[in-house]
Image 1: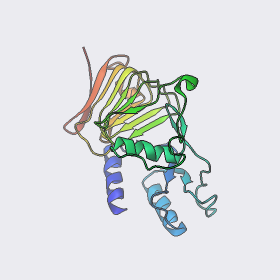
Image 2: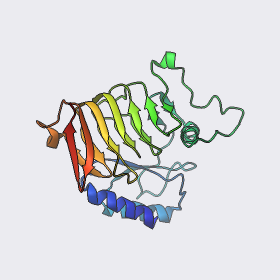
Image 3: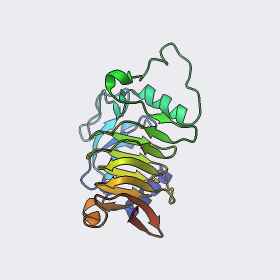
Image 4: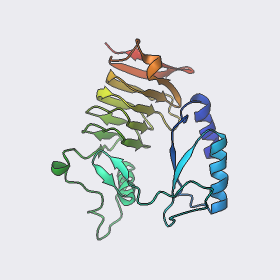
Length: 235
């Protein structure tokens, strides 16, 4: 936990306003701490300006009255619909080159008929790159901790992409894009048309207001140049 908090402090130090005014859902399904530890963690995050909106913890429907509510029945939005936790785990197995565990219903979990949904399923390449062939809609969050993210369509306002590697958007990029999220300083963000609310690389970020009149509405790339994030237009 101390190492994780050190990494969080590094991120906040680079991007002091990143969590400002943003409700955060705290997923504790990996740690599975007791109530006292949850109270301590919520307090520690609060001192860092991170407001916990809800807690995700399987097997619990409520905690202490002084703690945020437990999120019940939550599902993560992706470009191919709403996937349960089992499907997310299966997706991570594929991204890491591992075959999912066999089971009677494993081949049915999280699959969506693309012809009915009107979208294409995301594809994870052998290199760890996540390719998304459909537009990303408002409210969706794409988190890929294994490599680059390539979006063949546009990214709507109010959505977010977080990638360990670089982010490539072949349409208009709105919303937020955070590349190099796990400390990759060489990561970059590319888009055909920049209308982003925020661009970030390794925690260093630039907002829409700062890009107005300079790189808004243009094809750009964002990358770290020393201790500064540069957004330059592409010819």
